[in-house]
Image (cartoon, rainbow, N blue to C red; front, top):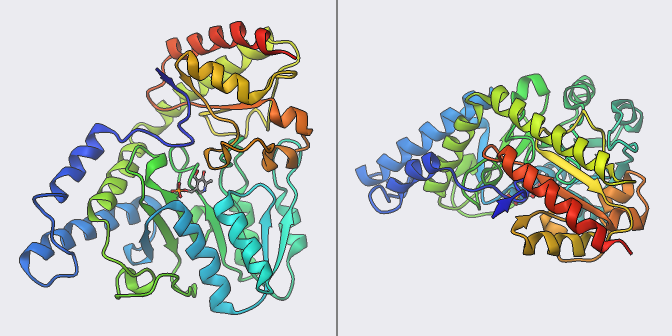
Length: 375
Ligand code: PLP
């Protein structure tokens, strides 16, 4: 099997699994318990928070653990909006559904939202953000890297605009966390989301950085966990797994990125050279090192995906979250693709363990299959 869907999810690395294992049967205490069994997990939880704080360059008390990246995005956006009560929010028109759908819901409740368009390369011009500011703007939310086309936005520039105007800036870094730096000071963000299962950690664990001073209305009520920002007994093993996973991602990051970038560029060059009319969706340079999104003209993307799957190659149509529907990806349409082009596009996402042989085999299979699918 060749797995080229790392943007959907990644396997849990063996070291992450080892780090988590003691916290199921041996150290099972509730970190809120006063006794020694609880205190063992409390210390482990604090250590995980400290590790994550160092990587993100923030205080551990500015971190809130959640049950997913989706929940962290909901908490950030709805939390800030509901703390303010009313106002205007700025975002891009290619955000993940866990951002977009929260904003749509807030619009129904009277909030105003500006969905700024990206250009054909998938890039948002920070000047547009500046021009969209209004006296009642309460939040800016722009993703670090897109889940479908892997385009990396100019977060620091947007952050500077937000900072200069005293507006909280939320950044969905779920897709970026596996390969890009997450220094919240340098990025100039006041809220940042990550998810463990995109970085070789477990599913069902998310993290939200909330800068000191940013007001947030909790979305899950109950006990006083997570500095009263998110009630519920912590997923201790999962959080330890996420902390270990983010630590491991930092090791030799540049070397791993160079390897994936070389494979990505080899893949793209070979496909464009050998499949007439094929094209890359989104900017070729300002994209994640592991993202390849290609339009195969005249080919139905869904049929291509199923044929590749039959050959043992796992890929994706747009994002996993919208897979299963035959509607064209809104992100691709918003970069100017036609409905036909969007429905002929496939995403291949590489991982740290992807080999040259796997990429070569995929290219060979694609060249063989796509001809038979042209309609
Ligand atoms: N944001 C982006 C950009 C994503 O790609 C995803 C998942 O695909 C999420 C948020 C949601 O994360 P989770 O799967 O942890 O809910």
